[in-house]
Length: 490
Image (tube, rainbow, N blue to C red; front, side):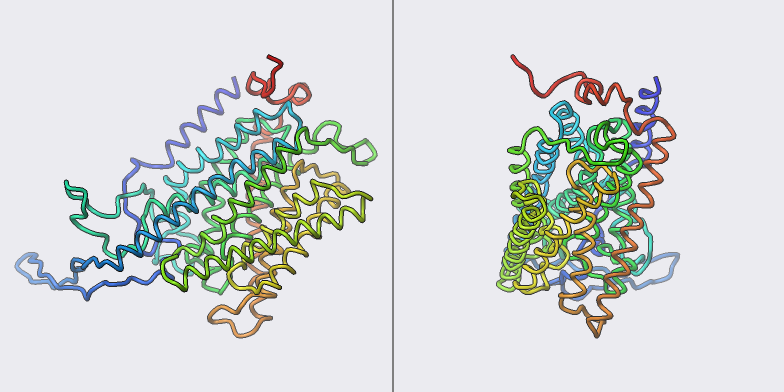
C-alpha cells in the first residue's frame, strides 16, 4: 500500500511541476552558447509607431531578416551535426546499461535496464517542464546563483508555408531549437544514470524514480546554470567545456551519497571489514558498454563545440576528438599497469574503468590543452581511478561499478587539470589564479551534489523507500521488484 501511495504522489508531483504547461520559445540568451554564438546577418532595427491614449510612442522592433545562402548553410550544418552528437550522447545510455549489467549479478539485470530507461524518459520530460528553465534562465540572471525562465516546450524555428519553404525564416538562429534541446537533455540523463551503478542491487525501484526526477529536474539544472547558464561560476571565469564537473562530478558525488545511505550489499564485506569480491556476471557486456560510451563521448566532447560550420570550427571539433581519444587510451594503459603491479595480473575491469576515467578527466578541458597534456591528464586519471576503487573497499563503501571513482574523483581531476594545463580564459591573468577558480567551483559543485542528494536519500530512507528488504535483495530485484527474469532456460 505504501508503494502505491508513493507512486501516486510522485505522479501528481510530476504533473504539478508545470502549471498549465505554457508553450514558450527559447529566448536567444537562454541558449547554452548564446554568448558565444554571434548573431550574423541581423540588420539594424526598424522603428514603428504605436498610438496609446493619443500619445505617440516610438518603439524599436526588429526588421525582417534577409535569409542568405551562407546563413542557410551554417544553420543546416550546425543543426545536423548537433543532432548527430545528441544521438551519440543518448546512445551512451545503452553503454551505461551494459557496463552496469555486466559488472553486477544476473539476478538484477532487469532492474538495471529498467532504471536506465526511466532515467532518460523521466529526464526528458522533466527537463522540458522545469530543468531547462532553471539551467538557462536568461540574461536577467547573469552572474547569479539562481533563476527560472518558466516552463517551456520547443517551438518551431520558423513559420513554414504550404509549399514547404520558410514563409518567415529564423531571426538569428545558427542551429535548430530542437537539436539544441535534444543535446541538452541527453546531458541531463547522463548525470542521472551515473548514480544507477553506485546503488545497484539493493535500492527500491520507486525510490530510484523519485531520486532520478529530483536530480534531473532540480539538482543538475541549478548547478549547471552556475556555469553554462551564465551564472555565478561563469562570471568568475570557471571553465568546464563539456562537463567533467557539471555532469560527471555531479553524478559521481550523488552516487557516493546513495552508496553511503544504502550501505553495502549483503555479503560484500565481512564482519571485520574485509572485502569479499562479488564479480560481475558478464564482462563481455561490460567491455561492450565501455566501447559504446567511448563512441558516445565523440558526441559529448566534440559536440560541445556547438557551432561546426566553417574551417575554424571544423578543425576545433576534430581536435577535441583527438585529445579525447589520447586521454582515454592513456587512462586505460595507466590503470592496466597499476592493476598489474598491485594484483599480479592485468585486470580487465581496471583497464575498462581507466578508459572511462581518462574520458571523464579530459571532458572539462579537451578544447584548451595540448595533445601531450591530454595524455598526462589521462595517465593521472587512470591511476586515480585504481586508487579510489581500492580506497572505497578499505572504507567498506560498496560501489559495484566504480561510479564514484570514475565520475566523482576523475571529474574533480578534470576540473583541476583545466586550471593546471588549460589556456587562460578572458579576465584571468595568471595560471595560479585560474587554478584557484577551478578549485573553488569544482569543490562547490561537488558539495552541492553530495549534500542535496544526501538529503534526498535520507528522506527516502525515512519514508521506507530507499532499500529493499534482505529477502528481496537475496532473491534478486528482477523477481522481487518486477516479477520477471532477464535470462530463462526456454
